[in-house]
Length: 145
Image (cartoon, rainbow, N blue to C red; front, side):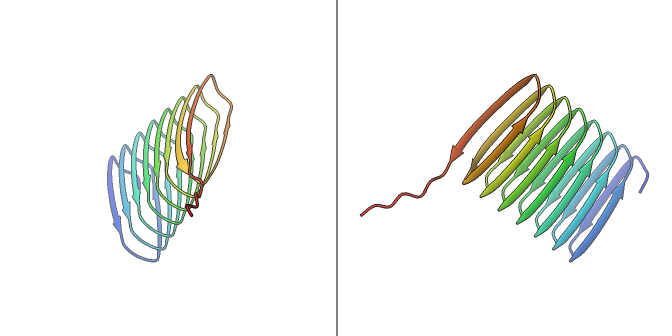
C-alpha cells in the first residue's frame, strides 16, 4: 500500500501488511501478523500469538496483547503498550515510551528521552540516551502458611 489513508482489518492465521503512507491504521486478530510501516502516523492494534511490527516514521503507536510481540521502531515519537508473555522492544528515536505488563520484557533503547514502566516477572532494560527513567514493579511469588 502506498497512500495517504490506509485502513486494514485482519482476522486470520497469516497476515502481512506493508504500508508507506501518511495515515496507517492496522487492526489484527490472528496467529501470525507482520506489519512493516514507513509513514507519518502509524497505529497498530494486535491481539494474536505472534506479532511483528517494524516502523520508521514520525508518530508510531503500537498496542499489543499476545504471546510473542516484537516491535522495532526508528522514529521521533514511539508509544508501545504491551500485555503479553514475551515482549521485545527495540527503539532508536527521540521520545520513547514503553508500558509493559507481562512475564518477560526486554527493552533496548537508544534515544534522547526514554521512559519505561514495567510490571512483570523478569524485566531487562538496556538504555543509551540522555534522559532515562525506569520504573519497575517486579512481581514475586509469596507463600502464606
